[in-house]
Amino acid sequence: MEQVDYIIVGAGYAGIFFAHQLIKEKKSFRIFYDEAVSASHISAGVCNPVILKRFNTFWKSQEQIDYLNIIFKEIESYTFRNYLIEENVVRIFHNDSEKVQWKKNSEKEGLSSYLNPDFINLQSVENPYGAGKVNRSCRIDVASFFSDMLNYLEHNQYLIKENFNHQLIDKASNTYNNIAFKNIVFCEGIASNNNPLFSDIPIQPNKGHCLKVKLHHTPDSYIIKKKHFLFNLQDNEYYYGGTYDRFDTTYQINDDSVEELRNGLQEICTSDFKIQDINVAFRATVADRRPVLGRHQQHHNFYIFNGLGARGVYNGSYFSKVLFDFIENEMNLEPEIDVKRFY
Ligand SMILES: Cc1cc2nc3c(=O)[nH]c(=O)nc-3n(C[C@H](O)[C@H](O)[C@H](O)COP(=O)(O)OP(=O)(O)OC[C@H]3O[C@@H](n4cnc5c(N)ncnc54)[C@H](O)[C@@H]3O)c2cc1C
Image (tube, rainbow, N blue to C red; front, top):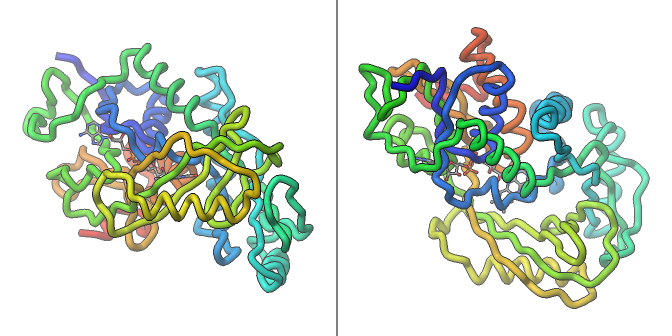
């Protein structure tokens, strides 16, 4: 029988960032990945400390930005690739009053380091009122990050490309098939609702569509946001997305969402574009918009790491360390994120 410190279930941002903590701390583990396309794998990878509707920020944004640079340096030390792309988010203004609001907020404590007070005019898209730049925003190279991390995990015998079957957990002996484990961390995204141990945690799916489009213009080197994010991937290929839908829980492509994206892009792009690819996945969200982490109320070696919402990169990276420190170093979880708030 194989003995490990941890089993991780799921290889999206939550599972992969938690795996990183274990690699760093030299813990033994196995990570189960069912190879389904998930929110993480189709995400834009944008790391943006500003809520672009209200020009505000969110809980622990500063700590999350600071930690992002640390964790990606650590990961680079064994994958030998930098995944942080130093492109800033720019928000196209809808009207003059938004500019006034931006300027006002840019003078507020907690926002002044993010909201750049000097407006810019983009060359590649329609922006008659100009745009505001978000300092300290960036994005990650999502495709390379997941492909490198999954290769690394596979090469080092951490990865099990299988669906994890909850019925096969033997709670009395702490075994799963031929693996004896100390802890299991469930990082299952919306599939958490099918996990008998955590199905009572109210994880709500929020469906997102995004596009890969061919565009023929010279890109501004920014992550451009009006209704959705637009940025250049390579050559003439661009990412555009994503939509939000709390009601549709089917996996089919929804024509209305595609139309919403098409219209959003048409509003800012004067040149023709061709949709190459449409992707769909579900964000795992929670009504209070805070991640969910912590210990199962009866089985104290079973943990959940979920509810990353629309901020998988920030939440996944930062809270993977918080969860590790909670399990291994007896650090407390703040009540805002503790799964206990649902018990
Ligand atoms: C269109 C779109 C764009 C987005 N853009 C951004 C962005 O720009 N920036 C950002 O920070 N966030 C973004 N997000 C949000 C981000 O993708 C999510 O917060 C994040 O993916 C959640 O990660 P997760 O690991 O919790 O869940 P998931 O990504 O859903 O991963 C869970 C994984 O676990 C696997 N799994 C589940 N059950 C089992 C099982 N029993 N056995 C084996 N494997 C299992 C699933 O197949 C999946 O691979 C976006 C989301 C969408 C949909």
